[in-house]
Length: 257
Image (cartoon, rainbow, N blue to C red; front, side, top):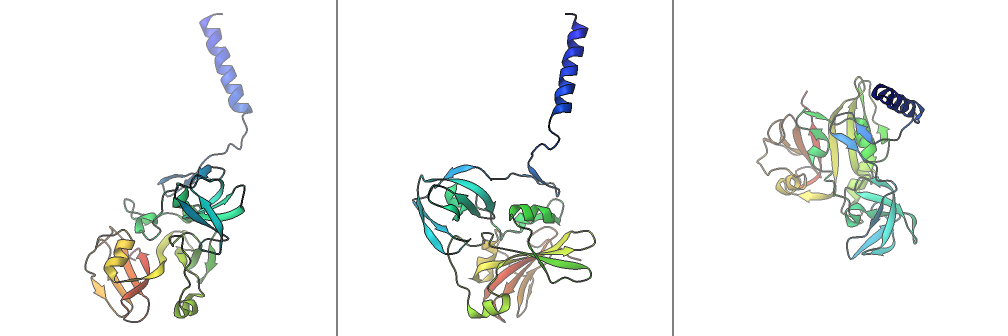
């Protein structure tokens, strides 16, 4: 067969294969903020890598039993630092993700939420995908709204009963709140509740993966580092557990206006 005919024939075959391929090809979820694809863990087969780990009815919830090192399971979905799974013993339960081979996500770090190069927060869709939930929309105003995510793995696999004061203030919910501008759907600030109150700002900064540095502003309710002090283009604000307390209940990451 002449070379020209071979080239024409091959091109025609490739064109037919491309045209006849299914239109809805599956692909990775992509974060439009630009830090790369978010791969789904659904369907992965993993095994317990620690001597034993608790199995729970919900993230940080009631203990249903335990799995031992080497026990296998199938991932249904990953939610923050938790894995919802099934295996021969449990048909839908939660286990601490780092105990079955998933990297620990420091949800207290500003760099989980903020692109320091672009000096902006990642988009809402990224967090909905990372936390595997749409978030609870609340405190809506004319210009913006809050998007709250809970049960996402802020703790370390343990059960913690919040004290009465915190329960009264936050209805026993703790998690991550995104503050979203309605006009462009961009995040302007992020609030992260500490799973347990942290004593002293050095320990709180360490928990957030930040360098320990003297604060620029201190008042009865907050300890504050302005933009560029700890993170380029981002203000860091530690919220006291109560007035003048040395314990901190959470951290705010804020884009300056």
